[in-house]
Amino acid sequence: MNETVAKKWRILVINGPNLNLLGQRETGIYGALTLADIETACRRKADTLGIAIDFFQSNHEGALVERIQAAAGVHDWIVINPAAYTHTSVAIRDALLAVNIPTIEVHLSNIHRREPFRHHSYVSDIAVGVIAGLGAEGYLYALEAGAQRLASKAGP
Ligand code: CA2
Image (cartoon, rainbow, N blue to C red; front, side, top):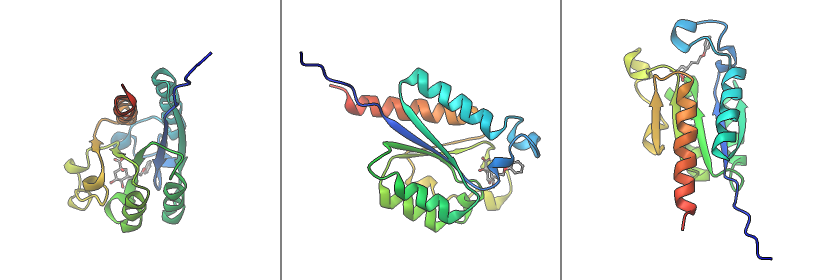
């Protein structure tokens, strides 16, 4: 028998500093869901999409850089909310460029409706796309978009 097993695409979801506090404070800006709730929703979405996901959060820039580096050769897509490092981190930008994995940037809040210092992102211009202001749903849309593009890449 000549059975071909389809490759299961693997998406890495990365969250930056203070997102571990979601649901506890600033719920008016970031919503009432905890990061664990968002992870559960992402895992459910991944199951329906038939993809594998890994979920990671750190408050440390170096740990985020190392997680991105470790994705090389393992993950096919990255969904990242770099949180405050969005606006400051050349290191995260360089790590994403180094691994050359297609990336979608996600923000819970619409950073363009907020303080001017949040309007610039070191990730946006190297990302496939940016989703901001749609709350936790933004992660699910990013997974859908990534899965769809990976499937069409693999198609006949
Ligand atoms: O809107 C987003 O997702 C942000 O990436 C969130 C970051 C912020 O610095 C970006 O400008 C936009 C902040 C995450 C902090 O999360 C908290 C959660 C609960 C309580 C306090 C902070």
